[in-house]
Image 1 (cartoon, rainbow, N blue to C red):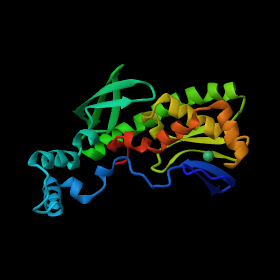
Image 2: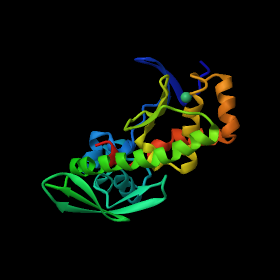
Image 3: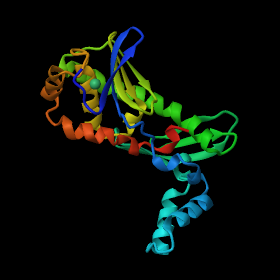
Image 4: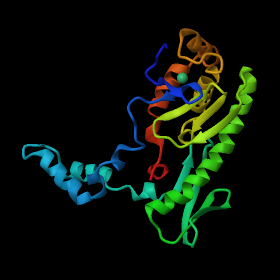
Length: 239
Ligand SMILES: [Zn+2]
């Protein structure tokens, strides 16, 4: 299989499926992963230990670094949600409620109901809302694109995955990552073109890439942008 750094085939239960993935096992944001991230005091100690006496970093720089490493409560309990694909932004408010859910109270306002305000509750409320929105908005883009390219597919599904942007099965199911919602429309269109082209070529052969190129001549920078797209994904998507 002609293999690009951003794409990898994987066997599927019912045959073969080709997937678009990042080989680097990316996480949404690197700062959400280490233990010290959760404890600013530990981060400070680790930083001081690493700096050494002769290190010429100023206190100001240290403070800035600490801010960068501090737990991003703002990201896990967001005050607003920005959906790049739609060019829309919602303000978020939190209220006490028995059942964890997100209520859309106005065009640009979400209300999160939860028994208590925790990172987990914020995610539990927001992720299903995001999945519904993605299902609707991605399908509203894939359908006309399929008609434009004259390449059909059987169905579309939305998944929340850390490593794959999309895949196409031999049965014609195109799976799209919900994190595409945080990418630019041009990038999302390219990923969709890519998966639709797998309906003609279930591989990454030269013929596959020239088909992609015929529909999206500027695919290369979009491919690079997509690889780096994980950094646009807010922490609450993966609690
Ligand atoms: Zn592919």
